[in-house]
Length: 239
Figure 1 (tube, rainbow, N blue to C red):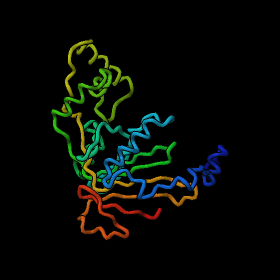
Figure 2 (tube, rainbow, N blue to C red):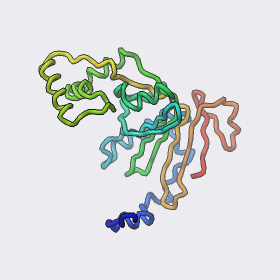
Figure 3 (spheres, rainbow, N blue to C red):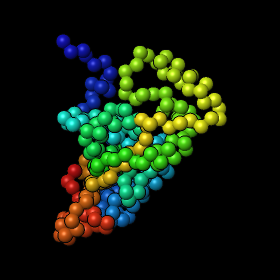
Figure 4 (tube, rainbow, N blue to C red):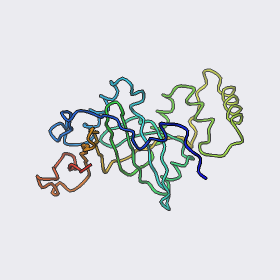
């Protein structure tokens, strides 16, 4: 027999509703700050950074899949972005890295709840150079550098004390001033976007979705698909 849910909230989860925004706050094509997605993302990210209640506006859900198509997702932090793509750093022995070695396709999702906005990105993923990984590693707080050296991410360990012992050994090895070597198994990735979708929630659930995608500019027909810049076209999707 299935256990009975004791929480009144959990029992009524299907009836949960949140008011998103008034209809006067639609996200229309005329509201785009640019006809390419990177500048539009910059505009939304900057607004998220200034919005109370959004503590980590650069937090993004990274989805990967293995060679056989088994999916997994987790949150990582965006560390830089530009016309070339979106960068994050991690351990190259982690599950996400193993997935990307077999299947270099990835998806990113940002969700800024107070703004009722989301950005979804699909693309291919590649490692950044060792020099770039070195540079960013040594810009991190010292504790974060030690943490990267301590953990062989996604490996099975006996218990928390194993990590504590390893961290203590590293602190004794490097002291307070000695430069910490970047582990070869730690570094950055660049997600090169092929699709970037901007979503804004509406209280009536007729949400706004405008998607940019890489395509031949000749696709733009001036009616449903619009020609953008830098090889992008954009169009509105039904919610």
